[in-house]
Amino acid sequence: MKSRKSHFPRIKTIAFEGPGSTNPLAFRHYNPDEVIDGKTMSAHLRFGIAYWHSFRGTGSDPFGPGTIVRPWEKGKDPVSVAKVRMDAAFEFFQKIRAPFWCFHDRDIAPEGRTLAESNRHLDKIVAHAKSLQKATGVKLLWGTANLFSNPRFMCGAATNPDAHVFAYAAAQVKKALEVTKELGGENYVFWGGREGYETLLNTNLKREQDHLAAFLHMAVAYAKRIGFKGQFLIEPKPKEPTKHQYDFDVASGIAFLRTYGLEKHFKFNIETNHATLAGHTFQHEIEVAAAQGLLGSIDANSGDPLLGWDTDQFNTDVRELTLAMLSILRAGGLGTGGFNFDAKLRRPSIDAEDLFHAHIGGMDAYALAFKLARSILADGGFERFVAERYASFDSGFGRDIETGKATFASLEKLVLTKLGEPKPRSGKQEYLENLLARHLHG
Ligand code: XUL
Ligand code: CO
Image 1 (cartoon, rainbow, N blue to C red):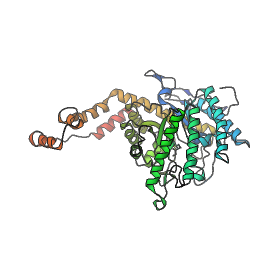
Image 2: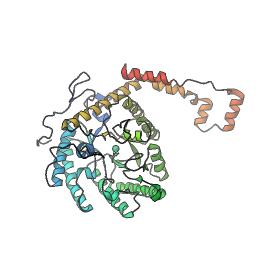
Image 3: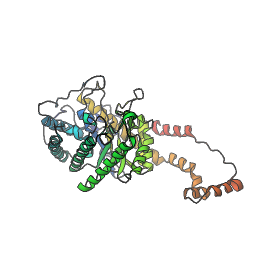
Image 4: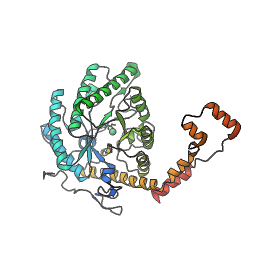
């Protein structure tokens, strides 16, 4: 990167110092250059930084305003401030050694008085982002449109009862797709911000779901028209800000995509805290998507078990992440996806240095989980146990069940004449939990 003024003058590029290091500004597990199976750790993990939290987050919450004041947020012209902010962001991406970033259109450029003015602002900032990407080598994991903050979207965007708002949202996503393509984005995310309802008293649920599907079909058609090859991703979340969001979880997302003939064009971006809000584990959501070949990307964060809302914290729970990583590796990885830190600093964490501590913790936890999951898979204990548990389906009448040859009548005959009563077998959960503990803690 050209020698510009540093925004983090006291912080050097974060180095890998190994598990024994006590330096709080060093990686202990994430060694971006370490080659594993012919690929660097950086290429395996594809970490991304969420622009909205790390560069637009101020620490505000429903009970009070922001607490975080960044020195680069100075000046009267919002487009010039946006450029300097972006310089700071790319310096951070480089120093934290993240190969990717992610953004919403309105995070990076200020909204204007009209859509045309907003688009002009966006064009200026996208040109700046393009030159920073070129200078630093940092790439765009995904882009998206903010269709939830502006009051015009208070009753949803694609599911708004007013066709005028639908049209506005369509125009906004059209532009967001163009700029994501311009920046080489490898994916494009649809998180249904307010695509749900507050009360069924004023809602035609069927029409709203039909409209959401029509909107997504238009996005598919437009991507084809402009030659955008990135992967489309749905990011499920059950609630918040709405009381019910239509993309409730991966399973309801799959049903929605199949109902409307969209399943070939979309995969899922799974966020840890959204899984929790839906009453699932992170690993559950990954397994449900992977089972259908629809695992796309991860929004890496965590909730707080005592708060019960979308706290978007950095995740340092190595057990939870190892289980998630096992399912991801078994599924063959994330393809064009990655691990995007959709996570924010706590309100009192006001130092710029806290951005580094937060991401170092998240990256190290994922890197350690990656290594543990790989050694668990190499050991093969769980794979052997599960294969053996289902072995009765590998041959004979079990195979006939899986291949569709068996019928109720053929199975009845077998039970009456040959098989008799099945012999119960232990599920051995405690044995398996101990096996996991041995891998995690020795
Ligand atoms: C909100 C959320 C979003 C999406 C992108 O809960 O996760 O930031 O990731 O719109
Ligand atoms: Co997210």
